Length: 316
Image (cartoon, rainbow, N blue to C red; front, side, top):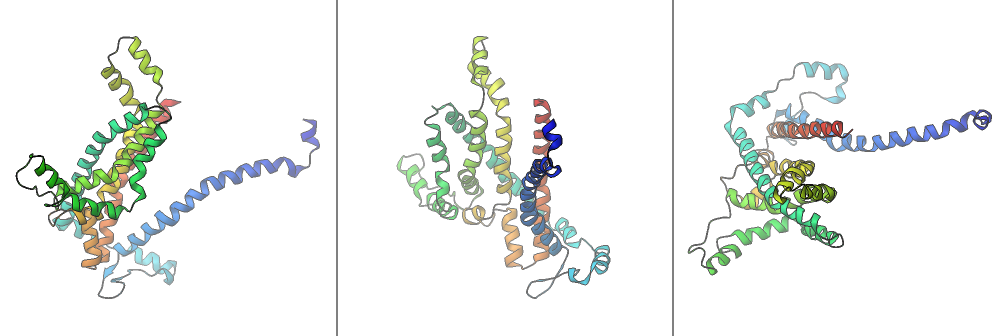
């Protein structure tokens, strides 16, 4: 205490300043990242969605000019109308695109969960020395281009492709199946492309599970399947939720897979968005579609955050 009383006033406050600086840096870096790459692009897209379409470059006329000053900006904001958003409710194309995207992404997520859970469980139960190799095998497809892998599926699923040749050769079918250019091909592509996003969070949850719980259940006479259902599944739920969100959210807005593997009848919001931007050149409507999609995807994210908060409360 005597040393602290005799120390110069600035010496004792330096560690506190360092701690505050560290906290600000820790919070400031992700905040800056989110501002630059989420908030600012969203504000730009939102501004375009409130603009008027014109035949020019760029193909929209802003309804307000930021360089005109705050007074002009406030006046323009008071006169805003949301006719592009109203237009989305009058044309059934957009609602059908949203619903079709949710259906395809939801079914694909369910299939990926059914396929990915056994893989993650087997990885978590494998010997410790083998687990890094198994993780590398899961992420190995990411070492090649996403576009090339989707193109490869075009050759596999084509009428004269590898899959039909294999099924015909094995005598399982007499005529080649029309898989390519269907919703089934789109779901196959999504399942293949997004499987690691489900396996890795599940593996992280299952790998850190306390095995003594299963041993205690076995000692108490609990059958293995019942121990799995009552202990393993509940403890892996955070990984299940994280994996489903990591798959479902990008799958809803997917464009490359439905464009290459889907047909003209495949309706997904990513294709509709691309068509509005580059075929119709109606940037305000396309921006409105993107804003509605982003807002809709905030719902599952909010649910996940709520579940995480409740889990943290329960762990305390």
